[in-house]
Amino acid sequence: MAELTYQLSERTVEHIAEAAARKVPGSIALDAKLAGLAGRSLPRSTAYLNRRAGTVTIDADIAASYPAPIAAVTDVVREAIRRQVSTLTGLEVTRVNIKVANAKLAGGRERVDATRLDSHPIDIAPTPVRVRSSSTNVARVSAPPQRPVRSVQAPEPGPDLAPIGYIPAEVIETFSVPKPTVIVPQLPTPTPLRPITLQPVVNAHARLS
Image (cartoon, helix red, strand yellow):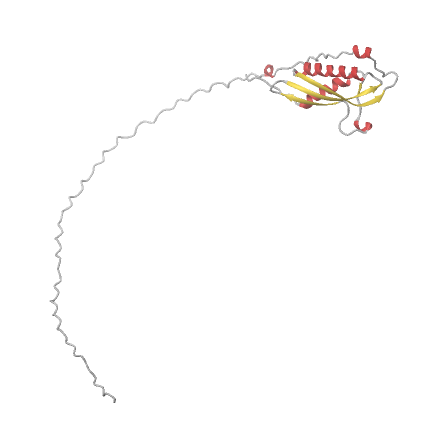
């Protein structure tokens, strides 16, 4: 059976970190539209996963209630994010950077002090989930009944084949081709050329005195 695997997205880790920060006393949920901020509501986080090493670094922006001890609130938020992300995902949280991006005046009952922060549980107990394996729902498969094999009778051989004779080829008579006679044409003996003598022609001119 092949090994089953799964892969976490960065947004899943960010949701866990934001939920952990939201539960810490002094870290309040703030709607971005009501607060006049751009982007997502607070708290918000950004996760940087290293899947090969199994580690994650988280940047978290929170809104603190005023006048809560902000340094103590950020310490508890950092530890809550680190432990809860590690418990729920199995990743090693190497660093958690906290940025207090806004503050909101708290009412009398919402005031947070160091005693309340010290008593806040930062660990989380995972909710057990019952996983039903698909292997228990495998239906039995029965093979269809074997069909009887019908015997096949081979046809009886036909009558014996009559031998096929052959007619020998007629003997072809040979003949010889006479050797052709080559006639060499006889040319007449050329008549020798008769020599021609040329007599110079001199014109007498009268001398003028």
